[in-house]
Image (tube, rainbow, N blue to C red; front, side, top):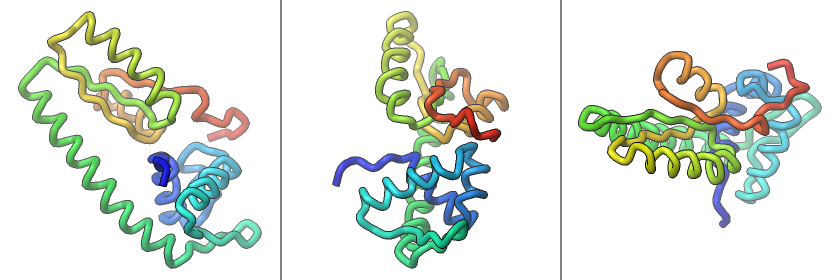
Length: 162
């Protein structure tokens, strides 16, 4: 199986939590059509039916509920592990806390170039890097959790008011 898109997995978890594409899309600052396309891509990649659409309503399949439950457990473990290591590193060295959304173009093209340039200028500084949802990036910068953040305009649907 090809690599899964972390963001699509987090989108799916939100859909299960909200039991609605429309409500989940609003909370994720996406249009419902963008979210629906992401879930469809995830279903195709996994070859598992996750939701059943009936007009504007959806029903999460049994397999979808089981998968969401396991994903929440796994993502919580991964996130906690990363945070613990970052906190330990921050206590022992000069550090920069960087965050980006996990959009492919940001993660694989923009961030590596920024990190390379920064490390050339400040080789002794440890960089704590975290990938989170777009709105978490913004909130993290606002509340001081991250010193620096990277977002791409691709992540937002300008026609959607959220």
